[in-house]
Length: 127
Image (cartoon, rainbow, N blue to C red):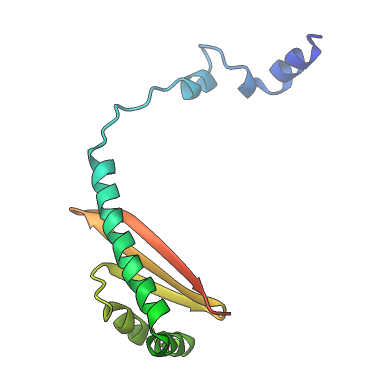
């Protein structure tokens, strides 16, 4: 009945932390005080990114000509044209794109002050 406990304590001491061991310090380290200011500001910035993502999705779903032009530019690896088309929708955020034979990935970025806080990745398949 006591054999498994003894076995773990003997061969895997990390599972048996005592107040005098390094493992005990790691497992019982206090967390810093909670400060929600940056967290709440980041969430507010993320709401803006989500609105811009909605604008992009509206352009893709409502204009087959625009979508075809975007796909052609991406398939030709014309990154500057892809970004130009995406920016033509009114998106103001920093963005990066990459594409695969299966689809388009768009990463939208924003910051709070000088701190890079929020990334939104959109992955849209076309095959």
